[in-house]
Length: 94
Image (cartoon, rainbow, N blue to C red; front, top):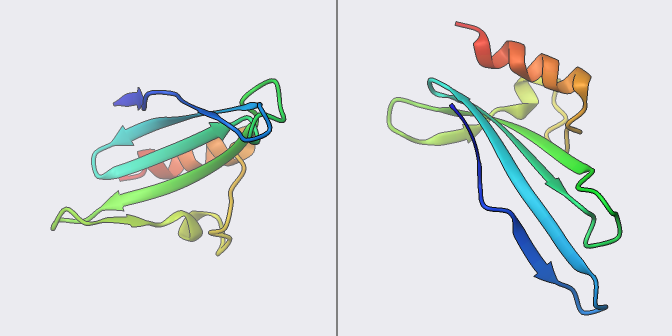
């Protein structure tokens, strides 16, 4: 399943507008979530990104397992092509 949450638009105190969107790729109990934003209105495109990997266990509890695939760096994983390929392989493993 592939879906996106409704885009969000927030007016900032300096008059700029922050935009963000989250796209989700789901396969069974595994999920790739990619969040994109325009850095609080400072960019013309939604280019600042973060990728998260989630697993839902048999009790329905969702855990962030990004660090398992990306070697302990759970702070931020840029949504670039190399990282997306690694996440896609993770998503489709048995």
